[in-house]
Length: 152
Image (cartoon, rainbow, N blue to C red; front, side):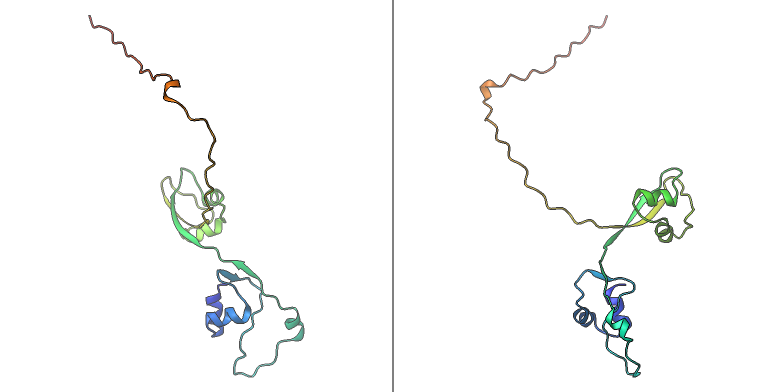
């Protein structure tokens, strides 16, 4: 669950929820996590001791995706496109409002939500230590001569 969604459900601001639970930016809350939130006015009972003692907060990096449209090849199915882009067939089916067992027509547009990849920093190109080439030592460049046959 996203942190803004959890904050909305608990009635807290996102900043307060992050601060109280030490949630860094660009992280999502995994299922089964226990969060510290203010107690409501209902005067409910305290959390059971074993729950409080064993509470864990599990986080995962937020995956940023971009919407991409690809063209299906002849005979491609939801499963084959999912395999090609390392996605689940159910995700591809949901994004395109079709059954997971469907087959696409050739050229049909298929919507995918692919994760953005961080650009790797470019390494400096290695400088090669070579001796300078002198113009006098270079062989002259010869152009090919095209001989045309005479017409009779």
